[in-house]
Image (cartoon, rainbow, N blue to C red):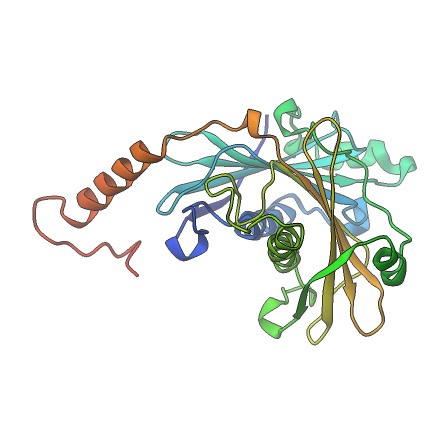
Length: 302
């Protein structure tokens, strides 16, 4: 596998939720940056492969404050899409897989051979652990309007504005902004459904209960745009419930993005709360008082 190192990062306390787990939008922030780096390294452009059709993230293990992570990226032609860009996030200290993302692309069918040759140096075999098992891999397509969704019981659960700080070098908002909005919307949707937002403490990722999340962009968001999120919880007879969010530009009512997420508690490795607190305390004591004397930790200093 010819994976490229595309990001080195540290997890800070203010990026984590009430359960000391990295917020889901912060995962996407890092995947966005790794993607920019990989596009530069591999010379991957929309001119050669087209726009990204869908991004599907799988969270395998929680990340905690002070964890160090590294990301590796590569291209696979044996995945569920004609061309798949894969980003793997691993715990830098022990190499445990924390999260994976697959980005689906659909290059021109007449140019597939040329595309394979162009990215031969960055190809790898897709690890099946990156392939979603709870969500359909196809990009989400919805012709439903705000009014039709409202008539079906979908609720407005979040409103927001795109500020200049939310816009990337491409001039549009990235994944982190909309995923943060979907995460916030989920909390309010659960409340409206009669479930306390933090009732399942310790069983959430960034406030959003999920194991897999699929994000499909329909049109861009730019600085100054005002948007809203309409959300619905679809109860399943078998399997985990499905959260579906539609993000609309509020003035024109055009669809911006669609998100679906599901969690599977049985696949998550449990972590004993008491032992976790002891480990965190021991880490803090060793960091701040390594020799029995106070010492400033510049990396994680608040």
